[in-house]
Image (tube, rainbow, N blue to C red; front, side):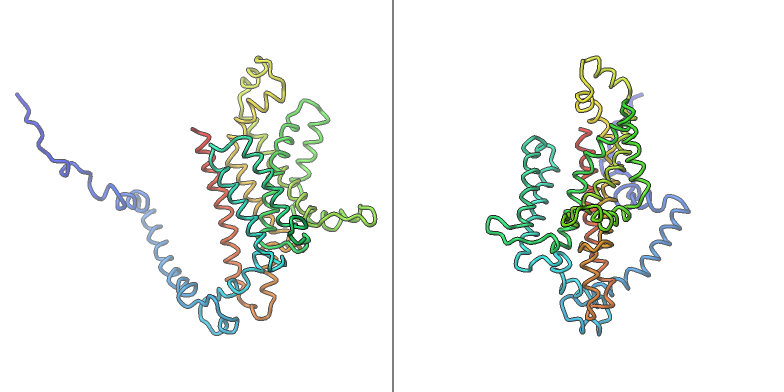
Length: 362
C-alpha cells in the first residue's frame, strides 16, 4: 500500500503560539505551576502599588536644577542636591580649575580597562601600558612637574579617591594573596606558619580596625618629625586585609587541581616556580574567578569605610554636602545617586568576570 506524500505547508507545522516566543517564556517561567502563578500575581500587584508613586516622586514631580528653596516647596524628589553639588561630590576639595585632571585620570583608566577586556591584547605591551598608565595617573593627579600645579593628597577626594583606593588596592592585593596561598601550602614550616598566622589574623579582625590602626596607632610608632601620607596608610590597610581573603580563595583553587598535574610537571623536570607559573596557577586561578571577583567587589564597597578616618571619598563628600543647611532633608536623593555609582562599579566588575570566564573557556 503506497502512502501519500504530505502536503502540509510550513505554516501548518508551526508550534502553538502559547509555547514559543514571549508568551511561551512567560508561561514556562512565571505561570508553570499554581504556586509560581500566585507568586507572580502577588509580585505584580506589589509593583503596581509601588512603581507609579515612585515614578511620580522621582520623575514627574521632581526638581532637577533649581535652588534649595524651590526643592523645599516641591512635592517630588530634589535631584538638585546632586546637580548643584556634583563637582564637590565627585572631586571633593580638588582645585576647581584643575578638575579636568581627575576626569583625564578616570578616562585613562577606562581606556586601559577596555583593552584589558579583549584577550587579543593580553601581551607584554598591555602590562607595560598598565605600568606606564599608573605612573601617568599619579603624575596627572599629583602635578608639580610638566607645568602642572601641585595638588596635595589631602585635597584628593570623591570618586577619584574611591577609584584609587580600589584600583591600587585590588591590583596589589591579588598577587600578595597568591603568594600567601602558596606559602600556606608550602612544605617549609616557617613559611607555612607565618602565612597561616597572617591570614587568620587579618581575617579575624574587621577592616575598620585596621583603618583605625593605620590612622591613629601607626603614627605613634614613627620617629618624631616622620610622617606617612594618610591615604597611603589607608591603602596599605586595604591591601593587607583583602590579600588574606584572596589567599584562601586561591588556596581552594590549588586544592582542586589533581595531584597528577604536579607529578607530571615534576616528571618534565620543571622546578617549583616553573611548575606553579606554567601548570598549576593558570588552572587554579581560572577555577576561582567567581569567588575571587566576589572578594574584589566586597573590597570595592569596603573602601567607603575610609570615611571613618576622615578621608573624603564619595560617602564623605556626600555627607559634607548634606550638612549644608540649605540641603538638609534631601539625603534620600543624594544616597540614591551614590548607590547608583557603586552599583555601576560592582556591575561592571561582575560583567567583566563573566566575560573573562567565557573567554577562558574557548
